Amino acid sequence: MRDRIKAIVTRESVQTLEKLAFIFAVPEEEDVEPEEGETVDVAISFSGPFSGGMLILYPRGDLDELAANMLGLDDEDEIASDQKVDALKETINIVCGNILPAIGGKEAVFDIDAPVIIDEPDFRPDISDAVKVQLELDEGLCFVYIVFDGGVPDVEPEQ
Amino acid sequence: MALNVLIVDDSGVMRAMILKTMKMTGLPLGEIYQAANGQEGLAALGENWVDLVIVDINMPVMNGEEMIDTMRTLPELADIPIVVISTEGSETRIERLRKKGAHFIHKPFTPETIRDTIMKITGIGDGNA
Image (cartoon, rainbow over all chains, first blue to last red):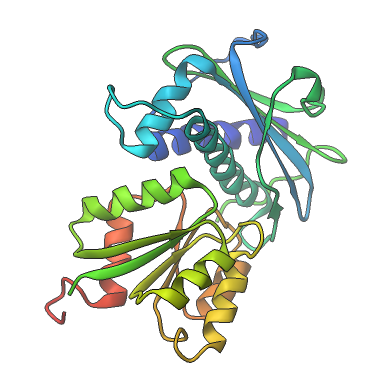
């Protein structure tokens, strides 16, 4: 079941980055640990037929491109730090919003909380039992984690 | 006919994306108003003539569904076309919004989806406008 969820998380993350910001991400299978300070971290929690949270560690060096592409800015345009943060929050919101019905089925109703930036690694949610996906971007690896309260749920057949 | 549009989303980046995408579609746009939640959206509707409301669902203070419910109770706002642009994936919730007269676009969206939905709602571009 973890493999099916990993495939869903990979697919929805890749598709969201491509459709939202024209960023082409390549899944990286070799397990790598994130380096402290190299990423900007954003988390979101959800509740419904199953509950839990997601955490995305986004490469700091790729954040300008994410925000610029979402906003349609040119290279010479300055991007405010709150725009970069907002872009990352919107990204995890959309990724999460697309993953949950892919796992729980289209009839399932979930509530998704507002995304939050995690300033210190110590404040990250517990991801020891998370399903982890790594995506290679231009400047580094993007780490996507999803964790479920009470264990990994069954995946509903795709419609 | 130029469309006056109100975009309601708590993400400034998403409001900018929606506006950028609407400009790309070639639709005739008039005044564009923005609000960060349903309460601000209703205030903007009270102060301006708006032809189309684009609204997110998950927002603080007043969410999009509450804003739609309020609009439908006010005679002067009840007939304004509404497009919900949201990450919502539950068919149950989407159907509930459709029953309230809202059209639904899923995030992430394409310019074509926004253009086609607005053309369908307003009749702009099919020779009727």
